[in-house]
Image (cartoon, rainbow over all chains, first blue to last red):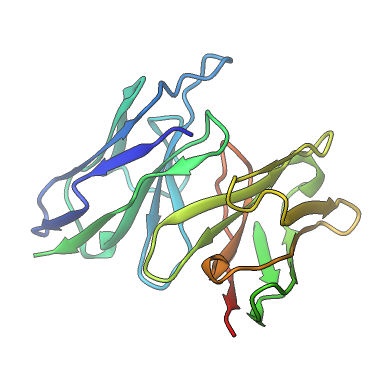
Amino acid sequence: DAVMTQSPLSLPVTLGQPASISCRSSQSLVYSDGNTYLSWFQQRPGQSPRRLIYQVSNRDSGVPDRFSGSGSGTDFTLKISRVEAEDVGVYYCMQGTHWTYTFGQGTKVEIK
Amino acid sequence: EVQLLESGGGLVQPGGSLRLSCAASGFTFSSYTMSWVRQAAGKGLEWVSAITSSDGRTYYADSVKGRFTISRDNSKNTLYVQMNSLRVEDTAVYYCAKGGRLTDIWGQGTLVTVSS
């Protein structure tokens, strides 16, 4: 299995300030079709996960443009340009290239 | 609007069985791979199983292989997972998810508790 390692695991952020989460895979996430199946999910307290980003950098409909994804191969990043109160929650990266699909451990974003 | 509604969770003794269902609406169910993902209390996400749309190929995590069986009824827009030989460590919220490698929409989850 591809092991997904996120850092940091806890991220206290001041409102209006940027935040960045790293996700590294133990294997390249480039699939045989040339695509890279790396997604980012947000899980607010008491809610189901919600996808924010798919295939590294594509933002889902309705996701604020302060969220952006980047990276390639084995190294990926989720950035929030200006953190808002509604961004509190746990963020997971997920690889869909190698079965068994796997998630990172999660990064808890909280407001300072 | 895409909706996924899980049901069938509950309390079961170790070694017991349970069948979860996921009723889908708002999209062409038969065209999508469907998945089950679980989350133990206070823990992260673990992919459990997936089933493709076209040929019904199934995939399982090593932790459930041989004990869980995923299936789908495209005429009823419903996804299932039959869970046998349940263990304490299977205790979790089980989510139904639309898609496989590009999973996007998740249900609200159903709680499975394995305890004596």
